[in-house]
Image: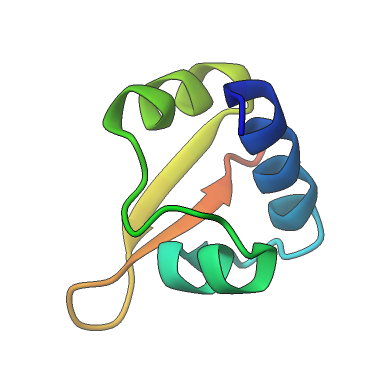
Length: 69
């Protein structure tokens, strides 16, 4: 899977879930082949699609697309 494929799938899924999803929810629902996301790709997503990760329940981080003002 290329970065662009990964980015597009994450962006599409998060755009349909405005409250966000955890990595596990994204990974499982999209059948992604990774146990953990690549830190470099996360950094790129923060710029490319305005990904933000916020604290959820317990230790979970919720991934969502930053809302524009």
